[in-house]
Amino acid sequence: MMTDLHFQEFFKDRFVLHEQAQSIMSEMTHVHKMSKLNSRPRNLLIIALAGAGKTALVNAFISEHGILGSTDQNSIVSVQMPAVATEKGVMLAFLEEFNIDFVRTHTLEALTKVFRNIVKDTGLSLIVIDEFNNLFAAPKNKVLGILNILKWIGNEFHIPIVALGTNVSNRLLTYDSQFRERYKVSTIDAWSDGENFRNFVFTFLEQLPGKDDRKIDERTFKLLLSLTSRTTNDVISVLAHSAYEHYNGPKAKKFNTVLKDVAKRDGYLN
Image (cartoon, rainbow, N blue to C red; front, top):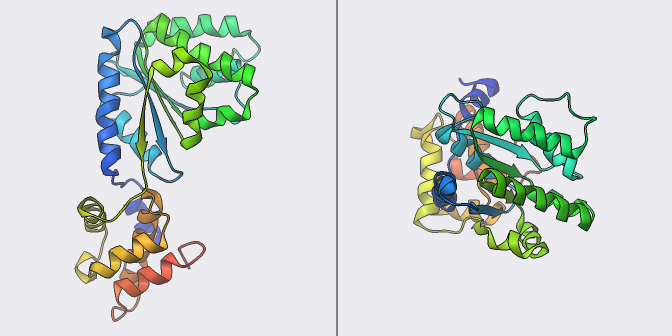
């Protein structure tokens, strides 16, 4: 019998991308590859609901296309926008990904000089910024200052930026006309019923133990869409915990029944 710990170990590194996320990964690849051919690289703003799978998307992209400090000069840095962002705070977030933490007392001008040297040494080729919507916690003058830093990075180094955030992030493009012109906006929506959603469910459940004892029928799909937020993370959580409880519980209990019980809880595990 599989223990809770073993189940979590089996599950933790597995994810399935929404069909739209797969398309956006292709857009990220295009932005990355084309950056050196444009004097002002095109950027990408990815809008998604909380739990739509942004983190999985970023992890999958970085795993496929290069990591910080890679020997092929194809470095990608991924940061989270500070909760209360400032120009200096954003620059420090970039530098900390390079394990540079001795510059906190320096001026913004000094930080940009360090950043310039880092770009030359590492071949930095893409910056990914998650929680882009955190910018709304900053005063407007700070927001404009941060947007100017991001424009400077594009102009000076031809490094594209992929930003990810909730739907309010789209409003940030209205702060600056130049900023708006340089970003394409793509969206990851919640799931709806159809062939892609059903393939997604089948694909995910096929990775989990006990698949021979589970019956996936019309009711399963309807339950998932009616009892969850229909985001990737929520659907996966319900499926994973339902499969775990079904695998470890009485075999006479139908998978649909377990799934319904799990989805109605405030928190999935007993």
